[in-house]
Image (cartoon, rainbow, N blue to C red; front, top):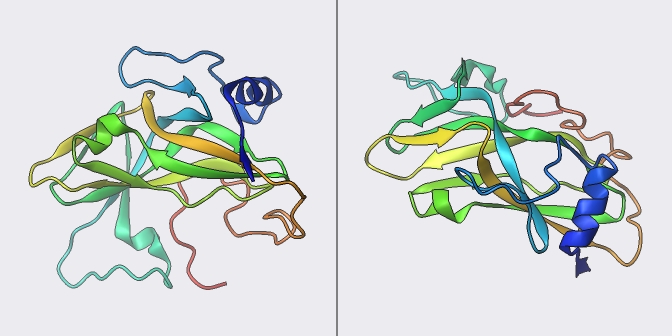
Amino acid sequence: MTVKPDHWIIEMGKKGMMEPFAAESVRGGISFGPSAYGYDFRLGREFKRAIVRPGLVMDPKADASQYFEDFVGDICEIPARGFVLGRSLEYFRIPRNILAITFGKSTYARSGIHLNVTPAEPEWEGYLTIAIHNHNSIPARIYAGEGIGQMVFLEAKELCQNSYADKKGKYQGQKEITVAKGRG
């Protein structure tokens, strides 16, 4: 596999691989747009905040919607040692010969805020659902419309035998924050 450079990312962005697409890096606030070998994506305004209730136990094999409440806003505060689910502002369409790996932005990491996004497999498309964790002992803020993570694009020398679309993956085409779907 090879890493794809910025000129490829700009070209693919113009072809609709990510929408909306910022063709240049934007530095106001927490930066977003093309980088040397990836794309710094933004955080949307929709969130799902984890509900804290005695006796409630998170179970990834169950319907996870019961564990969250919806929140919409430009700033989301995450409780100390808590987490929220967010989504990318950009809608992604990953080509069949590309695997995309996501990392958190250093500005947030240096503030004790980490994120997790599983790899975007070949031919996956949708808004990224992002698990955002506050490792601080005090509440922390995250900002919609600004950079939250970086997607790095890896190109395979051969096309994969079974893409995410071929497998009819359960998170294909997600248009909103998608909680764990459990078994199935």
